[in-house]
Length: 138
Image 1: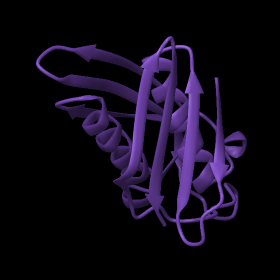
Image 2: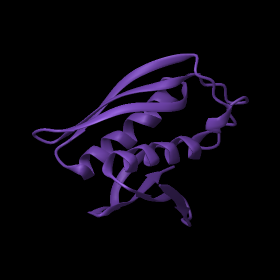
Image 3: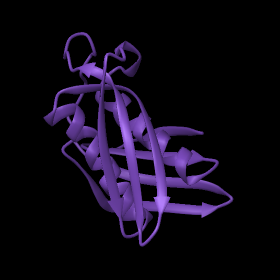
Image 4: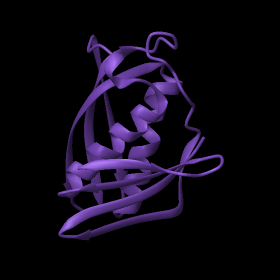
């Protein structure tokens, strides 16, 4: 499982490879968190529950990538790790718990604000290994 940031002038393009869909969503979250702050500087002092859903995997990924910065930026919660369940029934749904602490811009080395994920150039392939590519508007 891995992720890498691709060159882009004003936004972040991220490619994810993983063994399955759940791992791919975990890696996507880790990439998004580390783009925003230094995850290793966050302590697990509190937890926050959140959900994401979508009619297909693309909409689920969009919702997932939207919820994580909402927690970090809007609610001011620095995320250390996320535990979640992913279910498929009439679409897809994720029930998640984020562990972390109140955001401290200095302590957590806040880097950049993610405005929103986009559907532009989004790709998900699930043939054996899972491949995802998505763009985040910064």
